[in-house]
Image (cartoon, rainbow over all chains, first blue to last red; front, side, top):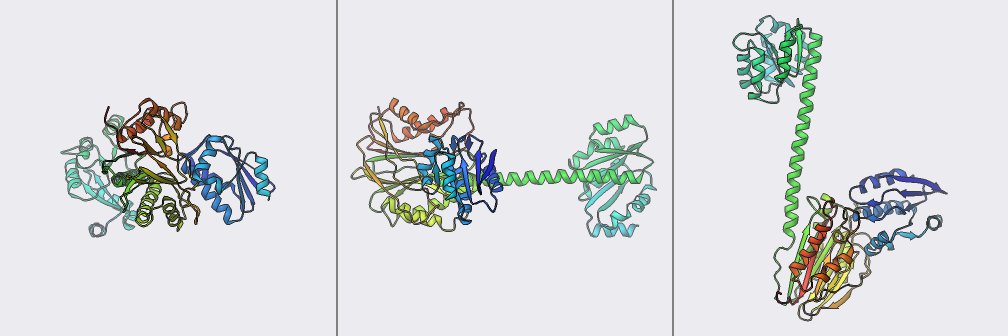
Length: 113
Length: 399
């Protein structure tokens, strides 16, 4: 799965290029994210502006990445979520463990805190 | 030389090569040139003087990997031998030794399935390369064959796993007659992560569960079995759905290194009062369908998917059914099914379907949902299981 990365003051910003994150590409999404995260990253912002669907396989990737970041005390936020994806986070309760922000700037503020 | 030959047989070499030639001087020449691979137990040679004897050797000697054969021989020539080798085994590869420039015979040999050819007089350096190339090819082929066998075995095990999974789902829905139940699960692949269950509780009430494990395949299937077992062990002692999910969540969270989770909706229904209490662990709320086909999605109780964070509280909510009302439980494989335009089915299309066909039995309601998904998603590969469980209060007489 294609992701586009950049860094801002120690925070890794990952823009997901796929429209769907499901069991067909969750594995490569996970691998690409793990490769992108460096030891000295203090935060991760996932930009979901292109994503219109995420399945439970995709949510599992979010959960494992969250656990990795928590272990190294790094911050994590997702921004630019479409309503359909936001609903999946609401129903599954993931909105309680993941910072969700409307804009990438807001998400960066969360990670800089 | 002969004693060496006998020694070879007592301890097996890696490859056995049958050399077929009516020229008696060939044998010592071979053993001389090939003494190194023979000594290192890489090659073992057996000899025959014509095609007829060669066929006998192939039938009686165990484990011949390749044949190196002359063409012109008494009784049976090399080209006839080529045709008859597959009678013994299709795995044996043959290399033909021909006169230099005898393109006609070489073409016939290749067309009859020879793997390669060398020319006379034999250049042993070339022969060694040809033998190695042939045996490498055989080795590759065997590895591919082995991999395929393993894959078939695995496929077989997955089929059994799928059968076990399907068999733990309730098939007969026995009730006291005041309500009806029906459920179905369509796995997207061999084995799925969805399940539903019906649990008869001690006080005459009935527990209904529908759940969806994250991811697919074997890990999801194992976590699904675990979730079902944990839930069943808890429901015997605790009645309140919110408390049940609380305990199941904590138990699933323990040792959950692989970050699996399950969304689960648990309902306790009392057939005496027609009231049900439900709690959701990150699962879609139930759809209440009235006997006139109108429907409402019940409020989402604020609970997180199970197995992620320990020590959580799960809210619960309740609702009372009227005669003919149905509660439809489903997994996101229903609402998130996509059609060829990549649109999601969505809950509104499910509600419209019920609106157009009111007052159906639990079984027909369940099948309506499953068929709606099938029709909608026709022509698209589905990545998610489709599961639906319907409870209907006092089924209406058939129309």
